[in-house]
Amino acid sequence: MSPKELYRKFRTWQKSPIQYKNKNEGVHHCANCGHEFEGNYCPICRQEAGDGRISWIWVQQSIMNLWGMDSRSMPYSLFQLLIRPGYFIRDFISGRRQVSYPPVGMLFGVAVVYVLFLQIMGWGGTPAFEIPDTTTDTASVHGTEPNLSLFKTVFNWLQDNPGWGMMATTMILILPTWVYFHHSPRHPRHTLPEGVFIQIFMAILLLVCTFLSEISFWFSLLIPFYFYLTYRQLFGYRFWGTLWRLVMTSFVWFFIVIIIVLATLFPELESPQEVIWFATAIVSMIAILAFILFIGYRIGKTTEKRRIKHAGNQAQQDTNSPEIAK
Ligand SMILES: [Zn+2]
Image 1 (cartoon, rainbow, N blue to C red):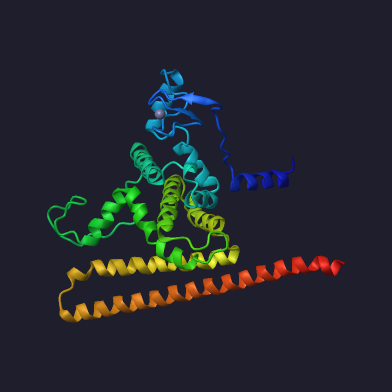
Image 2: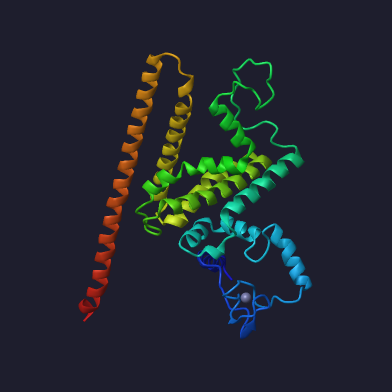
């Protein structure tokens, strides 16, 4: 098979790798509730067909189940997420929920492994970003200072809990992603709750990338790569369309982070003049942000209209051309 053919085969697999089949033909008698049924599971009590006496296979499955390594196993979901991120997320949010191990469980599973590995290998002693400590208290043990500002407390806590930390980081992307990719060709009109799950999957990917970048700095290049790959596969914009929207999305992310940081500094202000200055700064930043988002939304809407019109023309040409041929 030529490399080109192999690649085409891989692309087909990437778009839809999972086939479901009825593993258990015929009528079953449920060992749990006594119901007669066809198919893989009892419709009354959900017990699997064929479950009866305990076999070695069942012992093995039960143990694997503890780590999410049973049928739609966590490692396999993770593998799919790494190999076909956008298509995998599209499958999940468009209703094919069984393709994935529950994503929140997967995120925290990966986080546990991440922390465990760092501790075993003795890595991660120096966090990538450390906020200089300006408090001159006697109790200067990490994280226990009574005068620690709200922002620092939250920041430290999120760094110590990478699952929540990564989730907090990506949740800020929900709004810009919704605005810039709302009129996308492949998955248009995605809802905000869908956005939550898109970002949970992104958090898993980022956590894996951060983990790999502990091994070698070069792996951190995977982060922009995965953002591009995922958004392109999921939303179906072409190269430049995906790129500029992603740049704007990260810019808005950065902007929102700054606004949040400024807002947490509010209680530390002393004079009323400072408060007024601060409030003005924050309000104007929110106004600029709203304007940038609005422009992005309008551009998405216009290009969608143009695309639909173009597709309509194309369809019309296709229906006209046979008559011309006559
Ligand atoms: Zn039953």
